[in-house]
Image (cartoon, rainbow, N blue to C red; front, side, top):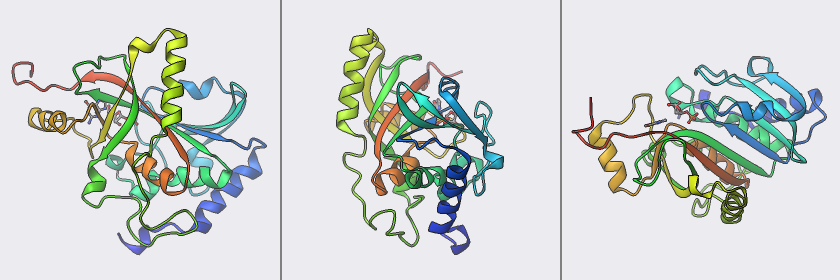
Amino acid sequence: MHSKDQISHDEYQKTADWLMSQTKHRPQVAIICGSGLGMLADTLKCQDSFAYSDIPGFPQSTVQGHAGRLVFGELKGKTCVCMQGRFHMYEGHSLLKTTFPVRVFKLLGVETLIVTNAAGSLADGLQPGDIMIIKDHVNFPGLVGLNPLCGPNDDKFGPRFPAMSGCYDKNLRCQAMEIAKQLGVAGLMQEGVYAMVGGPNFETIAEARLLHRLGVDAVGMSTAPEVVVATHCGLRVFGLSLITNKVVKSYEDSV
Ligand SMILES: O=P(O)(O)O[C@@H]1C[C@H](O)[C@@H](CO)O1
Ligand SMILES: Nc1nc2[nH]cnc2c(=O)[nH]1
C-alpha cells in the first residue's frame, strides 16, 4: 500500500464531526444497503439525508442501483444510519476508501453494523429470492493481501492482528432466525458462508465449481472488507445476502 492511500484518524474524525454538526440523530445501528436494497433507507422516520457528494471526505458511488446517500432516522425505535449505496473494490476505490464509512460510523457512536448484499447462490438449497444469514465469509481478496487493514495499524481503532473467528455475531444470527419463524418466513432463510471475489465479472464454471467445493454458499463482490474493518474496531456485525441468481456450475446449463 502506498502512503498516499493512508487515511489518518483526523480525516475520519472530520467527517464524523461534520455529520454530527448537521444532524441531531446519534445512531446505534448502521445499515449498509446492498444492490437493490436501498429502499430500506426510505422507511426511516424523521429522516436527515446527505448526498455522498456533500459529505466531506466521503467517496462517491458509481454503481447503478446505489443512490449515493447517507440517511439518518428512526427504525422500530432505534436510531439508525443507512448507506444507500456502498463502495466496491471493482469501481477502482482503494479498500480503505470502500470501508471509510465503517470507521466514521464507529466515531459516530454506532455499536452494531448490519451489512446486506446481492449474491449468487452456489448451494442447492438457496434459490433466487431467498435470504442467507451470513454465518462466516471467505475474503478472497484479503487472502492475497488486498485487505483494508494492510499498512500501518491505527491502534485507536483496533489491534494489529484482530481475530475474525466469530465476526458475525451468533446472538444476532439466532435472533434473526427466531424472528423469521415468528413472521412465517423461515422457509426463505438459512445460514451460510459468503465469499467475496473481486469482480466485476461473474464466475466461470470452473470458478463456480471451485467455490462450491470450498464450502461457499453464496458469492458476491462486497461486504468482507467492511466486516473486517468493523470487527477490527469492535463493532457487532450482522449480515444478510439476498440471493439474486443461481451461479452456473454445469457446462450443460451454460449458454
Ligand atoms: O453491493 P452488492 O454487494 O449488493 O452488489 C452486488 C455485487 C455487484 O456490485 C453487483 C453484481 O450483481 O451486486
Ligand atoms: N460474484 C458474483 N456476484 C454476484 N452478485 C449477484 N450475483 C452474483 C454472482 O453470481 N456472482
